[in-house]
Length: 358
Ligand SMILES: [Zn+2]
Image (cartoon, rainbow, N blue to C red; front, top):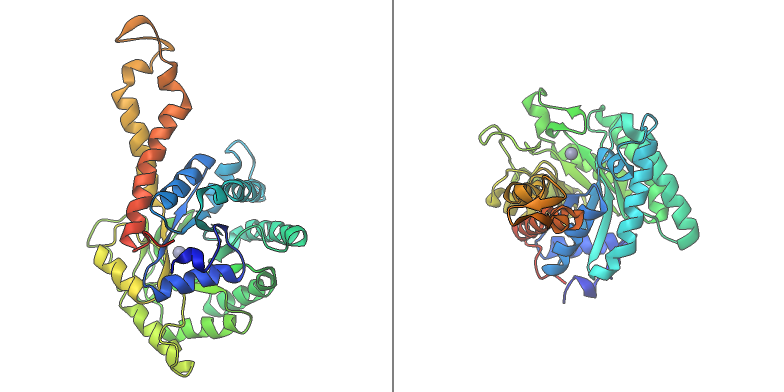
């Protein structure tokens, strides 16, 4: 029995998202969430998932969403981020089924100052729900980890009450993930807050579970966003087991892993650390930094190798009258980046055990 016996191909919503994560948790693998910024990157991620027969998560950050709409648009009221996220969702929805894999369509970190972006996406979800009986997206991430704990949890509950009836999954973050991403700089925070406590996780779980079962928690266990010098990061994925054990005990002990956990800031972590995280109930791991570099690699190598075919439209080492169209056509050189991105996504899936799962 595989994933397709549990959920259909295409964009998942409602309980199907939970069924996918339950399947992953039970079978001890996790699904990478790859940040996409264009139809080109989205297609490459879907292609990789299809090739290795695996479910996949595509996510758009606030900045990535704005890019999807076009960097030429003003974004002072998050209007480009809203339009871009909707455009990304429309594109992914239009092609996902053709790739034959289950897809979770997710929006990445939304901090307090970016809430107008979140509100705009929720309005689009509500509109989509009215017409089609399901939300536009599969899930959204609310990151109020910089705010006081009480405010973080209360705001997540408030939003989750609006999301749950639409069949939207909520991912929240508690504790601070170090590093820098989308303008939130946590490189200077003190060490203790880089590790979330089991009691805090339980408080989140019990508060959200009163609204519905479709949510996940990104806990801090020494993780950082972006790649740092090795040795600067002290990752403790074994701590996640304590969160599961504490929550399990509070719930009476019949479910040993009640939490759906998410791994942020995984770039640069070892295979052993990833394995421990997955064994402890991590079902989703964010991957962005490494796939950004992979997308560049193919384009960079092509341009460097074919430099003499790219300086003029006509004329190359094979002759002054030779046309260069088959080198400068974007379908040729952008495709080279897609190929290296596909390979890197396959590697991320393999690291998480997300191969041959359909
Ligand atoms: Zn995070």
